[in-house]
Image 1 (tube, rainbow, N blue to C red):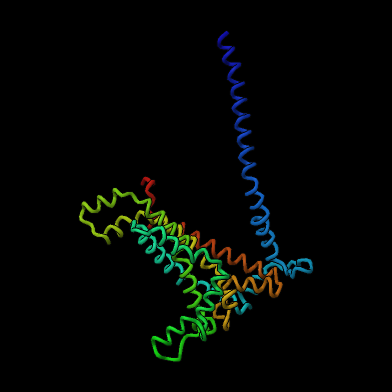
Image 2: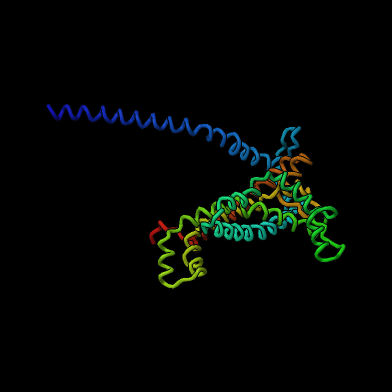
Length: 316
């Protein structure tokens, strides 16, 4: 009799547990639904539409006309600004990413020393990152003004010469101006905060053991700090490369891609084709090429990260 009772109770308990799991799953999906809808409407949907348009000729007025691979062939063979804009973007990233990573790491190390007023210093370093990019571009446009800007005033005062860089008006100096502006906003921004969090996660016991072994400040940084924050370095490097290759707003506001196409980055090229010449199909093809380039770079970084990134929780 007891056995029959138990066998009858178990299915009931299982059904209740199943209903509870279903309710929890439904509740979870309901909470996720705003994100899922946003993903479908604003990311996945536009990406699929862009993928289709990349094989068409579309001017936002007439019906898209299927042209197959013609857009891609024209990009690689006839577009005189495709390769220069791509190379210019890589050149910009090659300079900005290493210097922003090194500068952000040094700033984080300084702010991690526990000195008096550290909170104020952190706020001071982070303020440039809070400045909207349009406002920052306008500000630096004034700072780099060849005639009345303070930079050239100091250069003339120190050197005693009437000659000074033209900055955003000079093809030879426009890129340097954008790089300086990027450094100003990047070194004290999110990258620094992520490095700071990584530094604070290094166990103090490792530093104590290094001191016992006679390690100095540089030896502790090289043999303890750097290996322990390699995941943080890798994370910031991935985001930094993607962000640098997507550079658009600063160049659009400060130089509009000029002078003489000196700052005509790839994102500007996509924008011009899409919203100045209304070649949406061609611009979609450009965007997909850019997506593939970013995907390849990110894959390579993840593929070879295990050679130098140390994860404390991993067991060989």
